[in-house]
Image (tube, rainbow, N blue to C red; front, side):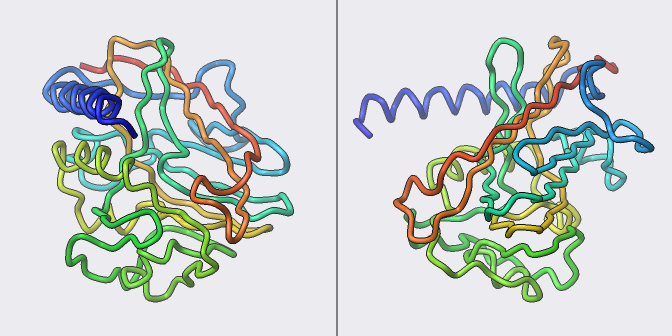
Length: 250
């Protein structure tokens, strides 16, 4: 990336982070499925979207742990059920909350990962999560997370899951708001690959919603895994958009 372009991207990211931190001391907002959203029968405040046999469900008020978490970030419980015949990538950069004006809240990586595209490594001495609280079936965790989740099989077929630029900016936004706790790490949805007929369920963390907004759209960009793919990786599979109503609560 040319130096001038890199500087503009960095400046934009830092401005976004500054706005994010400022919001943590201001009014807050709650998110509920918009009237036009498709909801799950028998479940409260759970919205869903489907494409190509893949179903994604999202709940914005599912966090029942430490209140400090919801005062700092927006936890969203997300479940991906892969009813397609292709393996799908799970990467934080593929998920966002998007405002009507186009402003994008990317999913915040709870871990600090460093290194280049093909040789990522954990930057801190995180303790292994003996009993992680996310659910999975036919899911393989990103290899740079392997030592943290000793009971979860790692994806070792060479597909590039790590996005170094994304981690550099969005992990900084996370820790400037709250240091991820053991509870947050244990319940987080990790990066990896969901095989056909697989499922993954856990929390994604986003910047808090600006209470001045009236709507936010949860957007999941689904990418099919191609082993040995180029660094850009995979093939577009589809996109799911789920609208939420934003309500100022204080």
